[in-house]
Image (cartoon, rainbow, N blue to C red; front, side):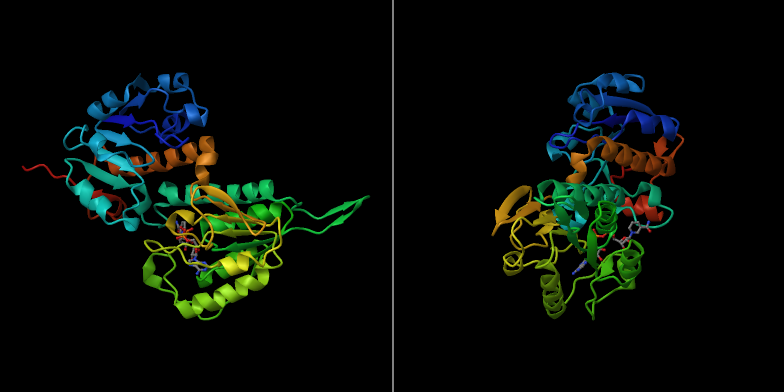
Length: 362
Ligand code: NAD
């Protein structure tokens, strides 16, 4: 099986890196790479050379039995792929129903890494966790960079500085990493989530839990949060506002899979925050947790810096690429038998992630 790896067009990361090819020891496959694919992740073509041929984009698309990328490519490019070939990407079909319908019209198979179930068996293939963890870490570093104040407590001859107060909204993978990073930098941290399991995790990281009673939960939602009532969200916004007026930094990561992100930080709350404070909204691409945040923009509102960025993993491309690559190759170790993809659609991992199946008439 020929695996083709593409250069991302608007992303510094690369889907497969040499280090993880070495470690994966995937058998019965050979690689072709698009020239320059790792340059923005500080991985040179020379480093790929030992693992396969470097060639043009069209050649990769035409010759690969399996194309691997991070962001979905245009359907015109997918049309260049061999009939019956496969593509692995992050299609996010839960955010847009038309994605699957468009793939179904093509003569290829499509796997979406973000559809792999969040089970113990599939943990090593979980790209959402790998990328969210980086985003959580970078959200705090980004906030610290924009904050005109210290994070840690400082006792100096010129006077004492109190530690920064950080509020984290949403304590999934990104939020927990943000809490841990902010604590490491010496901040005092408070966090909120609607899943009861998150409370213990927040406390175990040494942060305070912002208790808002009456959150809805569904054990059948695959570990994901469910949409809350407007009445609950209103009460939550009031609790958040109390903390926000004291906070130096607010990191928002709250998401409900397949839905618009809950709005937890209205404009009126931002206007009550101290000038110089920073909000980092990791949910900006799905509508944002902060009413005034704009996706992919850094803005200032009422003296507060608001950073809308749902792709912070892209700002740490070398490790983000390594982890994505490890996740994909772990998936392929599971899904490839004797050099071919085993389309066992009954299998929870393979069937769960194969969002479009092209079956040749036999
Ligand atoms: P996510 O990105 O979908 O959402 C981020 C967080 O926002 C979640 O913790 C969610 O509960 C929270 N949230 C939603 N609405 C909120 C609101 N109104 N207020 C505050 N918080 C709100 O979540 P994720 O990081 O992808 O994690 C999803 C689930 O998957 C979690 O339960 C996580 O523990 C689980 N998980 C399991 C595994 C595994 O077992 N292999 C691996 C990773 C994650």
